[in-house]
Amino acid sequence: MKKLWIVSALFIFSVKVTAQSYPEYDTLRKNEFSVNTAPALLMMMGGMSDNYTNNFSFGYKHYFKNRVVFRTSFLIFPNANYSYYNGIPEFYSSVGNKNIFRSSYTGGGVKTQINFGAEKIFRVNRLQHGLGAEVFANHKFVNRTDAYFYIYDSLSAPLYYQMQDPTSNSVDSLGSYYNGRSIGVGIQVFYSLRYKISKHWYLSATVGPSANFSFVSGTLNDKRKKETYSLNSYDFQIPNVPFVSDVSIAFRF
Image (cartoon, rainbow, N blue to C red):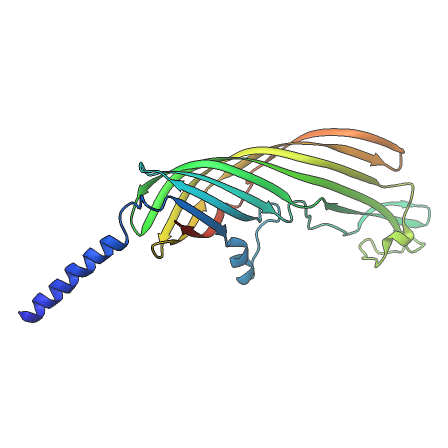
């Protein structure tokens, strides 16, 4: 009987300590900073996401008493314009005794984006659940080069061949260069999860679809026609970020 009382007392004490350490809704620590660790996790697991959605992000959240959270973040897409086909020669045409090939390269640097949104927390415990939405705006520079060159001096040249230096056999009368920029806006609807590690530290994840609408403008220099054109177009992307858009470590204070 004495042991039963001791066990019961320890159980009641542990419940009280847990309740004090992990209150249902923390109204004292209203600010939170987070860093997205998803790219690092993917690299450690030997995987990768699409280059145009892979990003690093830094976030800030502010908690209100009614379980509504204001959130904002800054995202960097380091390889937004990268193409898997960069530099791969493609057969274009046969002219005289030469096979002409084309290779393309798309670049332009990083894409940056800023998000603003809100979420409603529905369950508050060590594991927290929420639903919300964010709107965002982004910007990136874009450039594309199409180069033409020949391989050997006969039609017996293979149709797929990687030259070490195709510029030495370039066809100066062909090719083009495009230089422009893209400005986009979009929205993401998400479901969030947070796991409370300690008084200040959390693990969090955001899951949900997103869509991005961009206006693209730039100039195209055509070597064959020796003319320069102004080009304007629109681009619609789903997704703008991966479905699991972040897995973050967060500090709340």
